[in-house]
Length: 155
Image 1 (cartoon, rainbow, N blue to C red):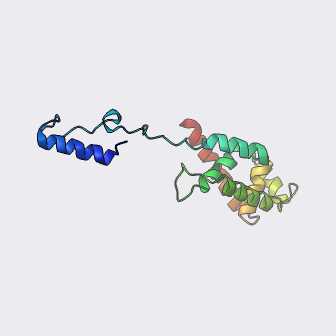
Image 2: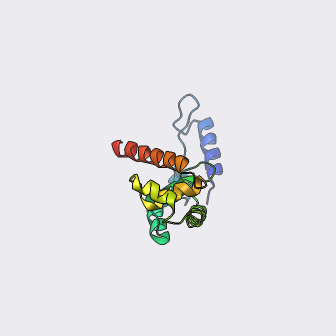
């Protein structure tokens, strides 16, 4: 079996002797039949599983909202490459968040204040966990989340 290098050298030799169809020193690449190569065309690796599919699985497995799972997946992107997501890291982030949220009782005065303003219990507890129970800062997070959600709906 002839290697591609040998076939290319043969083509170059044919060019020098005038046997190949070349123009201005540019010759066509030999095909598999000419080279005797059994190589097939390059195989495209399978595309990584879709982020939304992974987020749905994480949300279902961990009992969280899909948007939370999707955010954790985005944060898990290896070297900022959103085609290279780390599901294990995303699950770890969510688990850490859930542990933080568990420290904020549903019946606390701060949670009840935010719920009375129309925010749901889970997101109120989450915002309070991130702000060390500061209602004003938690409210700012909830408002920003609402604005992001509204913007996404418009797109």
